[in-house]
Amino acid sequence: MAPAASRLRAEPAIGALPRRALARYLLLLRLYPVLTKAATSGILSALGNVLAQMTKKKQKKEDSQRVDVSGPLRYAVYGFFITGPLSHYFYLFLEHWVPPEVPLAAVKRLLLDRLLFAPAFLLLFFLTMSLLEGKDAASFVTWVRSSFWPALRMNWRVWTPMQFININYVPLQFRVLFANLVALFWYAYLALGK
Image (tube, rainbow, N blue to C red; front, side, top):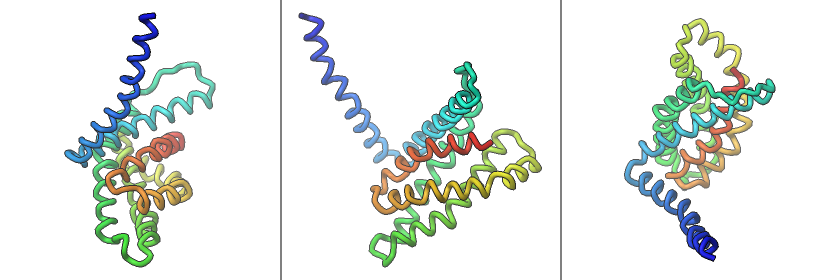
C-alpha cells in the first residue's frame, strides 16, 4: 500500500512542475526581457534545426540518429544574438509606432511586418548563416538567388496569418515566444531547403 500512497503524493508535485517553470519564466521575462527572449529564441531555433535534420534522415530513410551539432549551434547563435533581441525591439517599435487605437492599426502593423521586416529579416538570416557556415561571397549570392524568393513567398504564406494573430492579439511580452514556437517549424523548413 505504501507505493500507491507515495505515487499519489508525487502526482501533485509533478503537476506543479509546469506551473513552477511558467512562474520562473514569467519572472525572468519581467526582470530580463531581452535576455530571456534571446535564450528562448536560441533554444527553439536550435530545436528547429534538430527537427530539420531528423526529418531529412527520415526522408532519406537513414538509420543514423546522430545530429550534426554544428547546425543547431549555428541556429542557437542566430536565435540568441539576432532573432530574440531584434524581434523584441521590433514588436516594441510596432506597438509604439502603430498603437492599437490608430485606425486600421491591425492592417498597418501587418503590412509593416510583411513588406518591410520579413524580407529584411530573411535576408539577414541568409547572411548570418552564410557567415557562420564560412561561405564566401559568391556562395552567399548563389544561395540568395536560388532560395530567397521561394523562401520569402513561403514566409508570406506561413507567417502572414500567424503574425496577424501575434501582433494584434498576443500580449506584447509573449509575442517573441509565440513567434519562436512558429519559427521552430519555420527554421526546420529553411534548413530543409538548403
